[in-house]
Image (cartoon, rainbow over all chains, first blue to last red; front, side):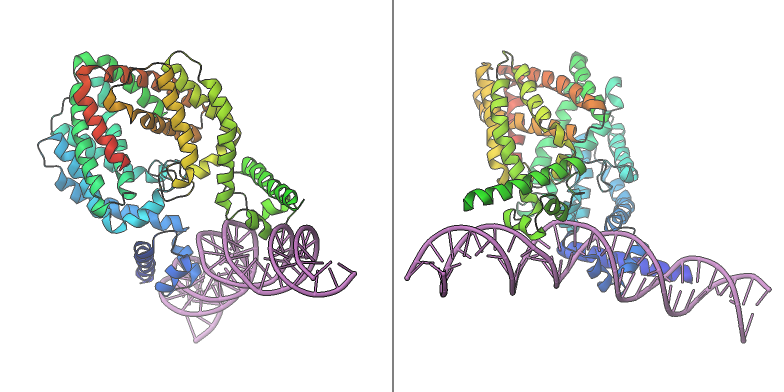
Length: 218
Length: 218
DNA sequence: TTCTTTTTTTGAACACGTTCAACTGAACAT
DNA sequence: ATGTTCAGTTGAACGTGTTCAAAAAAAGAA
C-alpha cells in the first residue's frame, strides 16, 4: 500500500507538471505552481523529481513507450521515402500538443553536456530506439547501401530527423505548413542522394562524406 | 562631465561582467558578483543594462567592430577555400578566450525568438557583416556561381559557418583539434560542391537545393 | 546663493529553482 | 501495546535575475 500511494503521488505531480507545461510552456511554469496544482508542498516535487529537468526526462521515457507501437505501424511503406516521412510524421503528431514546451527544452539542443539535449547520455535510450527505426526502414525497403556507408547511414538519417524536428518546433506558420513542405521536399532529396551515392562511381564522394561524419562523431 | 562619468561607470560594469563570464562562464556568474566586482550596487547594473542578456549583446557589438579589420585581412587568399577557412579561423581566434561562455549563449541558438540567437532580429547587424564577407570572398576569388544560386549562396555559406562555430563551441578535444580537422575537410567539400554544382548539367540538382533553401528562409 | 529638475545610485523586495532540517505516520519488530 | 525505522511530506531558507521606491548627486534656473 505504501508503494502504491507513493506512485500515485508521483503520477499526480507529473500530471500537474505536464498540464502546466502544455498550457504555459516550460520556463513559464514554476515548481510552486506544479506543487499547488498537485495539492502538495513545494518540496515534495523535489522528493520525486530531482529537478525540473528530470520531469522532462520522465516525459521522454513515456514518449518512448507510447511511440514504439506507432512507429511500428509506420513501418509499412514499400518505398524508403514513404517510411522516412511516416516515421517523422508520427513524431510530429505525437508531440503536437507539447510543441510549445518542447521548444524550451530544445533550447540547449546542441550542447551534449545538457541533460535535456538529444545528444546527451541521458537521452541514449530514446536515441537508440530512433536509430533502430531508421535501420529497419533501410533493411525492410531493401535499400542497397554500400558497405562503407552502412554503419553510418542510420545515424545520418537520425541527424536529418533532428534537424526537421528543430525546424518544426520553431515553425510559426499555420499548422506548421512550412515543415510539411520541407519534409516532403527533403525526404525526396534524401532518397535521391542515397540512390545516387550508392553508385560505384560515387565512391570518392562517399569517402569525403564519411570523413566528415567520422569527425562529427568523434 | 556628466556624460563621461556615466560612460565610465557603464564601461566598468561591462568590463567586470566580461571578466567574470570568461572566468566562470555566463550562467555561473551572478549579477550581484558583477556589481560587486565593479564596486557598484546591484541595481545599477540594471540601470545600464536592461538584462544580463543585454550585456552579451554589447559584447557582440564590440566583437563586430573588432572583427571588421581582422576579416578584412583574411580576404587575401586567391582560392575560395583559403578565404572561407581564413574567415572562420579569424572568428575562432578572436572568440577563443570566450569560448566557454559563448556556449551558454548559443544555448538557444536555434530559437529565433531568443534575443541572443544569431537568427534573431537583434543580431541582424552582425549577421549582415558576416554575409558581406562571404559575398566578398565569392566575388574576389572570381568564383563562378550560376544566376539561380547567386542570391542564396552567401547565406548558405553563413549557415555552414554557424554550424562549424556551434561544433567548435562544444568541441572538448585538445585545442579543438577536431574542429580544425572538420574545418579542413568540410571547406574542401564546400569548394568541390560549389564547382560541381555550377556545371550546367547540375541545374536540376540546384533546383532541388534551392527549393529547400527557400522553404528554410520562409 | 537657493530652489527645481534630472540623472545616477542604492538596497530592500519579489518570484524563481532548489535544498534541507524537521515532522508525520504507516510498516515492522519485540 | 510499545518502540523503532524510514518513506513521505512540510515549509522556511538560500542564492538567483530582476524591479522599484526612494535617496543622493549633479545640473540648470532664479
